Every structure is written in structure tokens, then in C-alpha cells.
Length: 174
Image (cartoon, rainbow, N blue to C red; front, side, top):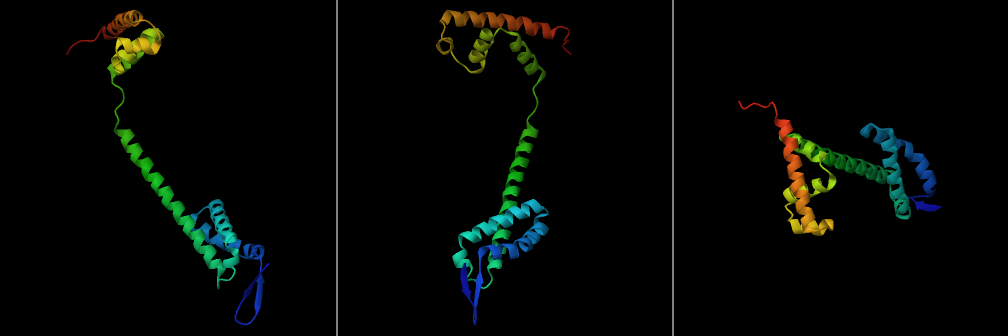
């Protein structure tokens, strides 16, 4: 129990009494501001937790509930700022994503043809032509001889040529 001295008499106030007397009022104000009772309760609870940590000083203020109310409103404003920043970030990402074109028909055909290759051949072709690794680097990475990588590349290219030629049948030059 903490004692607060006024001009003429001593007033005894515990934090529990203070909390129970003012929680609903602060919550109602924040609910009107945020439009969400759950959020208002969370913000009010946080403000009262901060008040509890400073209760020995706060109880001596002329109007401790004003301090709690100010903290709660500041928390609500900070939350709105964080939400606005996050929303703006998401909107910027969506605009960037919207500007990215989809895959071309050629890309779709190449991806489909690569998917039909055996895994070793596909890996060798991708590492050599897309990742720009040399035959030696691929051999080292895969733990095989350079001749094996050359064989995989040859077989992969041959299979891709056949698969991609199948996709171009019936296409006319205009």
C-alpha cells in the first residue's frame, strides 16, 4: 500500500484499486479510437503494466490516470504507424511483383523439356548453361570424373534438342 499526500489529508491507493477503477474507462476510449475491443484491451493492459513498473512515482502525480491514458494513446498511435509502414511496404512489393512478366512460351517449353531429362543430365545442363560452371567445376561439385560430366552434357543437349524439336512441329513462320 502506498500513501499519497494531498494538500490537507492522506489518501491511500493501491495499484489494484487504481487498475480496477480506471481500466474500463481507458479501454472504452481506446476502443472508440481503434474500433477493436480486443486491441483496446491489449493496449490498455500494456499501459497499466508500464504504470505498475513506475507505481511508486506515479501514485504521487496529481492525475495518474492521465499518465496511463497518454501512454495507451501513444501505444495506439505507434501501432497505427507500424501498420501503415507495413501496408505501404506490402503495396510497394505488390506493384513490383505486378510489373514482372510471366514466363514466355519458350521458357515454359524449356522448363518442361528440362523436367523430362534424367536428374544427372538436367543438373549438368543447368549448372553449365545457367550457372556458368565449367566441366571441371561440375565434376568437382558432383564428385565424378570430367568425362562423366561431358557425357551428361552431351546426352542432355541431345535429349533437349529432340524434346524442343517436338514442341516446334506445326509452328509456321509468318
